[in-house]
Image (cartoon, rainbow, N blue to C red):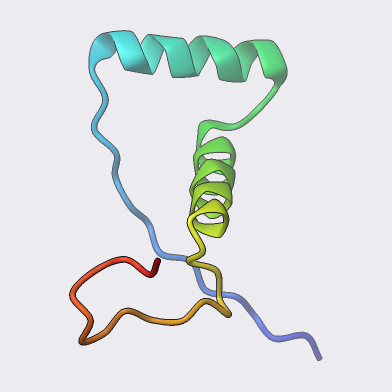
Length: 65
């Protein structure tokens, strides 16, 4: 039996102009906004080295270098 993944909801505040840009992009490319935002967050965290196997920074007071 496969394990069930849990999901946590977040809210993102955007200006009207930013929201319209996101909405137009999603309509044009066929994305759901939540799916696109989740993917962008995962990609950014991976790029910054904050993947599931990345070392934590507890007690160091900053980002890993």
